[in-house]
Image (cartoon, rainbow, N blue to C red):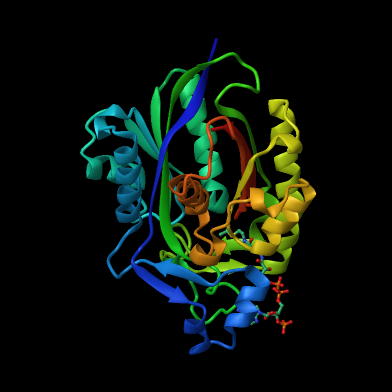
Amino acid sequence: MIRRSVIRSTGHYLPERVVENSHFEQTLDTTDAWIRDRTGIERRHFAAEGERTSDLAIKAARAALDRAGLAANDIDAIVVATSTPDLTFPSVATMVQAGLGMTRGFAFDVQAVCAGFVFALANADGLIRSEQANRVLVIGAETFSRIMDWTDRGTCVLFGDGAGAVIIEVAEGEGTSDDRGVLATDLNSDGTLRDILYVDGGVGTTGTAGCLRMQGNLVFRHAVEKLAQTAHRVLDKAGLAPADVDWLVPHQANLRIITATANKMHLPMDKVVLTVADHGNTSAASIPLALSVADTAGRFQRGDVIVTEAIGGGLTWGSVVLRW
Ligand code: ACO
């Protein structure tokens, strides 16, 4: 028998304000048609003034706890993936801990930009496997609207705000690919590629939060190549093949990247969970948001094989395969 991390529940929260593509036509040389054609994005949510990443994270966490019928003190650890924390410190995770009224366990943040949730889930799985926790709340939460250059049409139309949460808990497995829970993980980074996607500020440089800078077409090329590679590798590690996959839940950055990855895995698009049209790119929040939206709609059946994959600044990229 081995320890596996099974998803117990999901939850999400999106800020109330919805901004359609046409909003950007008023201030930028862009069109709704260009944004739809090149990205698949139609609208995104933006946090209200004063609404912080921890506020979104707490609401997503409460939704996941409610759906599981659990109290905050039933959780052993909180891991939050974010690149847009309220403060330099303390972590958003400890703010969530306090916000939920959780008085035990431990909490910390993971920063791997858009790949953050994949890194957080892999680390949370490690905590469960190594007997440091039996139940972990894993959250992706972002307010990327805070780090946009609103004059840069190549970036500011792409991103949105939101939060998603999953609760994973220990279950006994046989150690085979028939087990439920996380079956394999694959994490990667290459720091030499930092200049194609970064934020031009921070505590050690400008003393300000800075703005996101991206060479979109270069990131696009790396994404198409690296996401298919990691997805194939994680399936190999689990002893599974693309034909075994019931659902691909990709990072929601660009519909063209998602379609290219699905094609390379020979997966039809009806096996791909898509939220990019309504959420835009919510960075580390995009995968748990997509998981929760699909779960809420009752799309996953017990035993389904789900692959998640993401790439982000660093570059960082990776994937997780799990059985629902
Ligand atoms: N409206 C109109 N034209 C635009 C816009 C816009 N919003 N944005 C860019 N353009 C223009 C460019 O200026 C360029 O014009 P030029 O030829 O006159 O110079 C032209 O469109 C083509 O630009 P490209 O960047 O080559 O366009 P591309 O087809 O690559 O699409 C995009 C751009 C959507 C950004 C795409 O490259 C992309 O999605 N990249 C990947 C982004 C991503 O996946 N990021 C994930 C990680 S994010 C994270 O970790 C934080």
